[in-house]
Image (cartoon, rainbow, N blue to C red; front, side):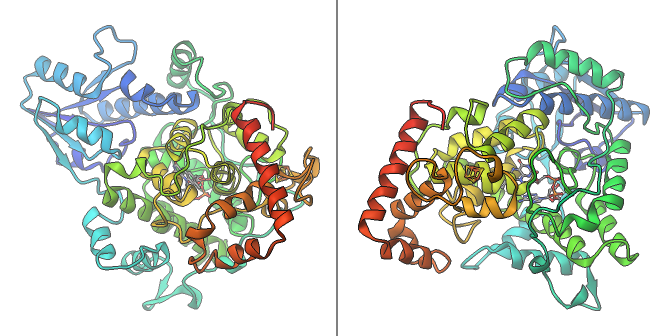
Length: 507
Ligand SMILES: Cc1cc2nc3c(=O)[nH]c(=O)nc-3n(C[C@H](O)[C@H](O)[C@H](O)COP(=O)(O)OP(=O)(O)OC[C@H]3O[C@@H](n4cnc5c(N)ncnc54)[C@H](O)[C@@H]3O)c2cc1C
Ligand code: SF4
């Protein structure tokens, strides 16, 4: 008799630990524990989602005939750690072994390896590329660029392939995407689910135990079981997907979701699988209900980016999150935790994050990520923030996006250039600048947009490193061509902003 461990982001019937188990004799163990709920100060909506989805999945397994030992957070005997619960359940049941699917975080893998009860770790085959597949692709390559990995994934899955060629003749239709924000939005946003009894019970628990964590708990609407996740996906395929590509990078005040799928929360928890999601999107294009630029863009995120970042996380090893190639050491400014700011773009994204535990890709990359990188914030602190505040954040997916793509702290493994921009980009892609106390057109002096000042200050600070980067060299040359007096003014103004951030003053 064995224990079958099912973690909070492993809520899939197809989980390797479950498909390996013998339902007639093995016992499923699931546990809400403080060690997992508090290793960063997770957003209350993230904790509520996880516990609610776990409770519902445990009930589903029990309904299928599994024996399930489920530990609630407030059970008096709960040891409050995964290894502790495995030891407790072993002595209760007399089990001799634990079978687990590999967790998505080095920290937990180490905890299971060190557990006094023998734990057999199985591959997580809910992903399209195994570690071996990714390593075989990466081996011997000078640069691990996602685009080439993605093409292999297309060929391997057959998604958007016609007789061995990419559908429509191109691999990538991004040139048709990335339009500035539309005048109005025709999709009402993700399907919302009113809390049922299980969710309400969890909301009460989270309200009582995690009230001081950053983030609003009220207005909880995430899907928390597979049926709801599928309903949400179908709702988006019909209404959101057709315009997803066009406005993928746009940002509009008061519009938290635009045409985004908002499926990373159920997908990362295992309520949906990447292949079924990508296939459902392809079917919309084949049926003529969604254009190729939207469908290809979406499928690239799922079978390209999502699989690629996972490959990077496991290939690079546990020290990845500690990398700091640019030597940035500034403390994360308090405005990331909701302290007042005059920057409308930052206030919008942080406010939305506080309310929804969600922001879309460009908000994460080109607003909060961009600002942290320009300001030279310690990437480990940026990583902790992203891991805490987004409901879809698990280290395997969050760390390469933050440490690699957003903060360039891996020295250019994931991103071929740092994702930095002045205010002009935010102005082009959003409506935030119109109502801002700063002027996006002003480059120096009082009222200058902080993104403008910090952008050139960043280029100046890292000119030596980036002058030989083909995608940055032109920018570095522009800096060097600038008049020395202008350079001096930019650097003085930028230093003043950074000093005010360090003092906790409103910027
Ligand atoms: C700094 C930063 C941090 C991020 N942290 C996370 C995170 O913790 N968890 C997470 O799932 N995604 C993360 N992403 C990727 C992306 O922002 C989110 O997946 C996306 O915003 C989720 O919203 P959505 O479902 O509406 O996505 P859509 O825009 O509708 O995209 C569809 C799906 O594609 C996948 N996807 C898209 N881009 C990526 C990517 N770069 N990496 C992995 N999957 C991707 C997601 O599963 C997403 O649900 C991060 C990106 C950045 C720049
Ligand atoms: S002016 Fe600058 S700080 Fe203000 S919203 Fe625009 S980009 Fe953000």
